Length: 185
Image (cartoon, rainbow, N blue to C red; front, side, top):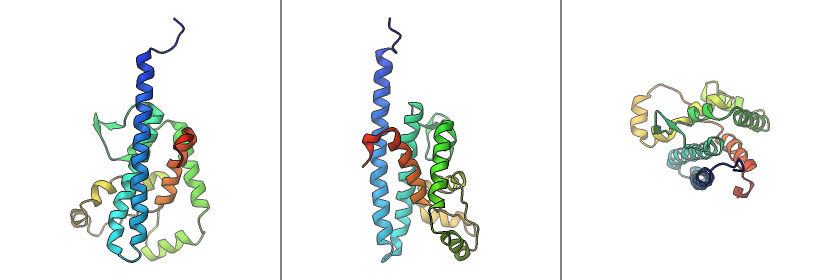
């Protein structure tokens, strides 16, 4: 025996990488839909809600793809699939988390210095500027806002910020395509 993993192990690795690629492709579709709906929101503000839901779903799928690349298995909580990508982030391998944190920090530093204070002033609240807190804010958007009427009723008076979608998306997207350069679109 040459010390190679069993053939079945190699097949499983290939299957999971293929699964990660498929999830990544779906993430790109929802990302594109979010972008188009967000652009439509300038003339029809009602499009901003589905844009946000699609953005959150794309983030979830990007993170799930990255998780498979990191661990070779799908992300589950208590044996069940989960939409909570903030929890998923915590389960990524430490080098992956550090790469995401660094990319997000760099993306925020590249923004216009007046943008965040302007948003905070208009919202009359402090906007979280770290990746982890932003992931928590975004993590349940897909579940919560797809039934916006229920979300509004349950969360009257509570503020929630869903900021920095492009910066979060770019951080996770870039982390993935650095590992899988052929996936870059």
